[in-house]
Length: 317
Image 1 (cartoon, one colour):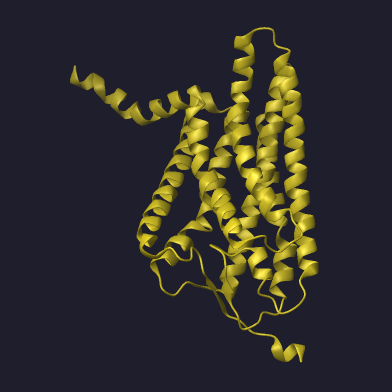
Image 2 (cartoon, rainbow, N blue to C red):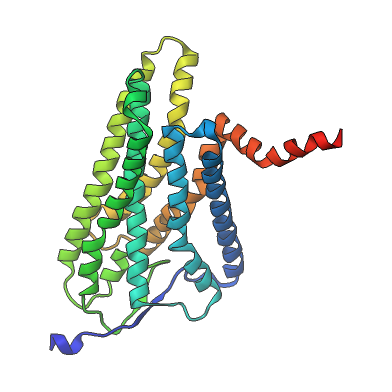
């Protein structure tokens, strides 16, 4: 009987943003503008850091890797969201849905690890300044970044395998803006408590452990900064960490509420809202936060953008 009820679904329907009606066009324009700004902003930061030798330091190395990661992180979901806003047939193949879920979680986990590595870098720079150059070498930075990507892409494999083996019923509408584990589990024809438990354990380990490590690092950083005697010294020391801390709080604040829970879902509206925050708004905000709060990066961007004009200007004399 169980085998008879098992469905061989070949595609799902992504409901996306329901009940948008006549504002669907405006939503498409806003989402497209946000995506283009995210691509241009993160690509600009990545190229500026790579092209300016003065920015070839561990801190900016990690910032460039984060910007590069955000390019792929948004590419896994936003283009499909845009296509579904224009299309009447909002379908995605079963394999495509699993691939989207895998890459989205892989890149998300990689970002968790990368933000942790950035916190460790700031901890060494402020709390161990004399040992910092000897410890945080170019080789170590490259190894840490590679480790973040490798661990991130290994983490969701077991979850994807477990979901791929679930029987799905005839109902194939996913009440979400992209494929993800919670909405997929809600469509299964059997008890998914094991899947929910595995998801919770993996997400709790990745998200809570990395977030705890970051908070401990910043606790020590704040303690070290407060010991600096001059106000100007304290401001300069903490300014190098402020941008990273803001990104951490926005990103982890949304994914903790979304993924570290034993229920499949709290409410569809809440899930969609949180999904927009960590899949669209956080990658959009990163270039703004890092550029506006970093004078050195702003100067490097201006030098890069106007370098051609500076080189050609003597010809007119």
